[in-house]
Length: 65
Image (tube, rainbow, N blue to C red):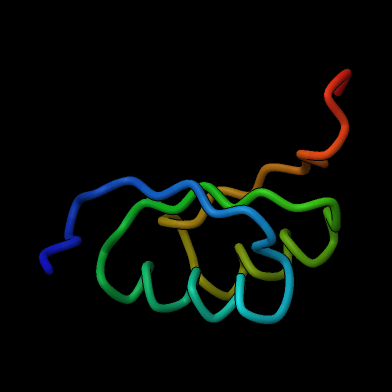
């Protein structure tokens, strides 16, 4: 599958499997919008992955937010 120059929206991006998926996608030159509640972890991940990872602090279970 060719993923280069694609866009991914990834929930749960701040830990565990989400981090592993984010790393794999960025390695494949995918622009990743990583959603999670943990702003600090997202910022650390952005520092690690670079410009292709865009952190978005969000709780997808909170409809009002």
